[in-house]
Amino acid sequence: MSSQIDAVILAGGMARRMGGDDKGLVELNGEAMIKHTIDRIKPQVKEILINANRNQTRYAEFGFKVISDEHSGFLGPLAGMITAMGNTAADYLLVVPCDCPLLPTDLVPRMLAAIKAEDAELAVASDGEYEQPVVLLLKPSLRDSMKAFLEAGERKVDFWYAKHHFVVESFADQPNAFVNVNTPEQKQRLAAEINQS
Ligand SMILES: Nc1nc2c(ncn2[C@@H]2O[C@H](COP(=O)(O)OP(=O)(O)OP(=O)(O)O)[C@@H](O)[C@H]2O)c(=O)[nH]1
Ligand SMILES: [Mg+2]
Image 1: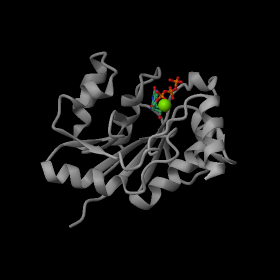
Image 2: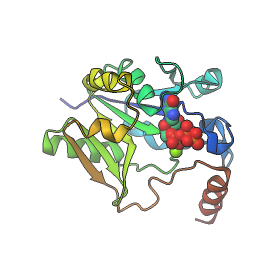
Image 3: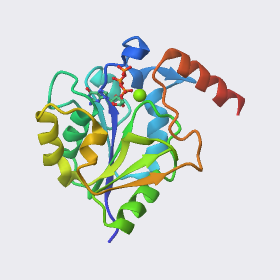
Image 4: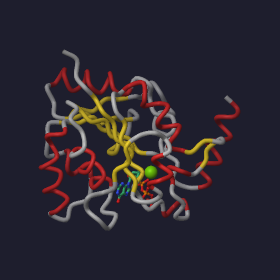
């Protein structure tokens, strides 16, 4: 039987480098940033969850369930993952950020194959050089471990997964896969690149 896979798109940060604008809703080439992410991920998973702590009504307009962090206070991406893991019945949860508009279209099959090959608990994507700690495929049963880690005051995603059996899947074959838009300048640059190609 094939594995059921849901996804959470993390859009729950404060986006300070974007001047506090809600990053998932900022427009890139005429569409909300999160719409680019949705278009990349939707064909690869069963259900999508949007994790947002502001503007929930606007996020709901994309047609998916919107969930807010169960821990208040903007505790970081782990808080969004914990909430999503409690809202899925899937075998695996894909975690992606809202500010990576060019995610691989073969993200899920490759991460899943990497997990199965090593019988690992989770996979983290890499650009060939750096791990991408908010691009993960993980078993929702890891929720208790993540919750305990967050509630102990820890915040760093890579420190958390280092405690588990994880595999790294490299997407070095796709140099722009994890282009990350954190500032208005990065957004302008990417918009110009997309328009040229
Ligand atoms: N649920 C949730 N997601 C978060 C939180 N902080 C960051 N994220 C998400 O984690 C991912 C990576 O976050 P960053 O881009 O580093 O941080 P950010 O808060 O969005 O932006 P900056 O304030 O400019 O660092 C993004 O998808 C954010 O939406 C949080 O407190 N809760
Ligand atoms: Mg970012």
